[in-house]
Amino acid sequence: MTTLAPTLQAFFTDRLIRQRHASPQTIAAYRDAWRLLLTFAAGRTGRLPGQLDITDLDAPLIADFLQHLEHHRRNSPRTRNARLAAIHSLFNYAALHHPEHAESIARVLAIPPTRFDKALVTWLSEPELDALLAAPDTTTWAGRRDHTMFALTAQTGLRISELTELTCTDVHLGTGPHVSCNGKGRKQRITPLARPVTAVLRAWLAERHDDPAQPLFPSRSGGRLSRDAVEKRLTLHVATAASACPSLATKTVTAHTLRHTAAMRLLHAGVDTSMIALWLGHEQADTTQIYLHADLVLKEKALARTTPPDVQPGRYNPPDSLLAFLEAL
Image (tube, rainbow, N blue to C red; front, side, top):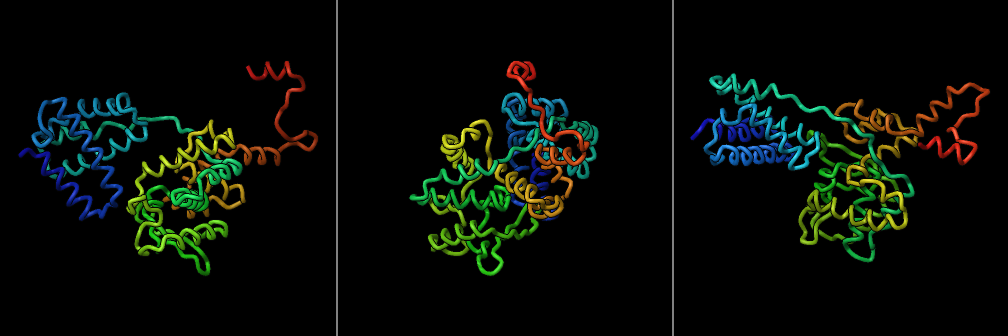
């Protein structure tokens, strides 16, 4: 057996699981990255994954793999960098156990993450959110589940992984209604519930009548919904809602868009960004600054407070249709 196979196995079982107590999401992400890399390397070298050695995964091959991710699998730069982070993590571990491969390992560790433009976040306006929540057919079981699921997400800002892991016991509808979840980095977070969402959840829990340890939003077979299943249901309802609210057709709406929507609603209500960071479970409060950058309304309000008294505040509106045409060029 080559040195790569036992090193890879020890990395997952000893380093990630036993020493670092990595979350299931981290282990799954690293697993997928290495499964893709080993498959790519096997096709390139003609050897089975179990026959590959550390020296086979040299810097040129890793660079070609990253190019493969971007150009053939159409992965985003963020995904490409996440795969590279998984590769770097194992090679850092290998550097301690196989110093004889130090030169090859150092070249791989020197591969930098790619830089990319950070797009402004997308969120839903109140009319768009209302149209989305009205889209599910609440005369059906699946429609009531989807309506409750997306109403909860838009109010609490739960991540999709947090949402799918919820059980019935995580919802507390007594005094001080709230939902409890294990968030990113295994941090437990409690988020209060607004009255409309509390009422919807109460009706949904009354309908469930299942073991309290069962998933809050199950599939038809009773298991947990997958991330893809949630996104698929959301895409379906967005398409339906677009007929009532055409602006939805111009937006790419994902489950994370509902998380951004929850943050923007808090921001517009005057909630401080540090509190929003706690609400969303951000590791650093600076992460919440992306919502300030994205909100033109708040910037215009700030500009209005600095406008000289003799200047009419507001956006420039061309006085003539012909001038408007020229301004739009």
